[in-house]
Structure formats: C-alpha cells, structure tokens
Length: 182
Image (cartoon, rainbow, N blue to C red; front, side, top):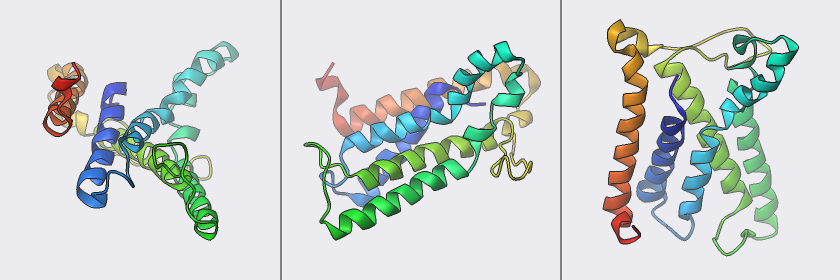
C-alpha cells in the first residue's frame, strides 16, 4: 500500500491540477483547498489508528484496515454533503468561510476528492479495497506491485514516496517560487 506521503502529496497534486488548469481562478479556488484535499488523502487510514485500540480487544489488522473507511460510501457521503450545502448556499447567496473565499460545499468536495484518490491508489498500487463493504464483500484491486521483481518490492513504495515528494517540491518551486520562502 502507498505510504502517508504518497497519499497526501498525490491528492494535493490532483487538487493543484484542478486549481491551475480547470478552475483557473485562484480567488474561487484558494490554495487552502489543495491542503484540505491532501489531508483528506490520508483520512481513510484512520482505521490504523483505530486498530491500535481494537488490538487489545482481539482484532487483527486485516479485520480493521481497509474495511469501513475504505468504501465508496464515505466519498459519496461527502459529495452529497457538498451538493446539499451548495443548494442551501445557492438559495441564500454563497457564504464564504473566513477571509479565504472558501465555501463549505467546496471543502466537502475536496474531502471527497482526497478520500476517493486514497481508495484508487490503494486499489491500484498494492492490495485491494472493498468498495461496498459491509453490504458486499466484493474486492477490487490491480495490485500492480506484484509486477515488480520480488527483490525490488520492498524498495518500490519508499521510492515512490520519495519521487512524488520531489515532484511536489519541484512543482512548488516552479509554480509558487518556494525558494523565496525558504
């Protein structure tokens, strides 16, 4: 499974792509949404934190990890919350949260995006996810890591983490002139 850095940075890169090339309006899509998508990209792994407690009650990691938090129901729920809040805000004019021009429906959309990206990464790179758990025990996953020679598998995930982090830093330098801050 991809590590923390990969989940966060990949979700941030996708949100940044949406910000730069689809929305193209930094006032309507502030960088804070990118941050929210990145944080949401790791939220499905909260089940690992739950495992630290459930372990003492006899649960195994496989009984806890990639179950309830790795279903499509969660990103769908946040997308529905975005739709509901958008409809309410549309009626009362769009209310912005704070000084950052952020809206509740876009925050919910970024959480749904980050969460969904996490599921796609887990299902694609290593292992499977059960998108309809607990209703169906159907599992889906490409498990691409199995196509890498066995001797290199332990190096692949950390290398992927490093590569995506370097890509992110290069993007930040190119687009946002990160070196001026440092």
